[in-house]
Length: 249
Image 1: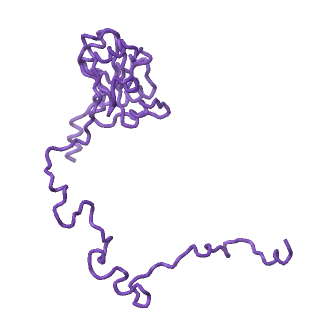
Image 2: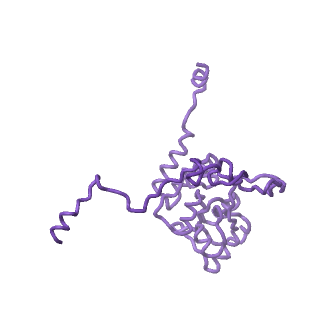
Image 3: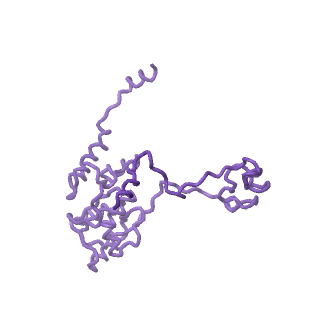
């Protein structure tokens, strides 16, 4: 590089930083007179909905003034936002799958939603798998299963045959991880009151009940801590006199 070019060059600093040529454009200013090209009606034309203030667009579902289709259809009943759809599986179906060699279970490797889906025993896990007691008279093999829900008759039939049933809570993400076989994420714990009461009750074979924590072969330390925390309300006492004095004060 020649000395002349080196002398004309300058170092880049905060004092000479500028946007690239042509990268910035002047802001469009409307309503500043006819000479600007955007005066008067400011480029919106004359009258009409799009000439008024606001975005000029009708709301979703607007049909030009006629009664929209959402109002023309009658409404009946309601949709429960907390409703869950479970994939039902009966005992006779599980026994049939085990006879064909398509399912196998042991205390250390129980049947899960993943096994039922991959074997074709259920075609969709929906919000979880529910074990039902239909066909209990055909059950011959001791089965060990971890499902989202289980009926009382199914629990009685499985345990009478030397098997075990444990019900585990799955939110949508935890259920997807179970089906995909992912173990790198911590499964969610129940947060709704009804779910907490259901999965901490041994009658339902809830996995967070004290009996389940002691009997399940595969119990994580987190389940033990959750069981203590969620069952602590049973050991708490309530002083009615102190509460009345606090309220009156």
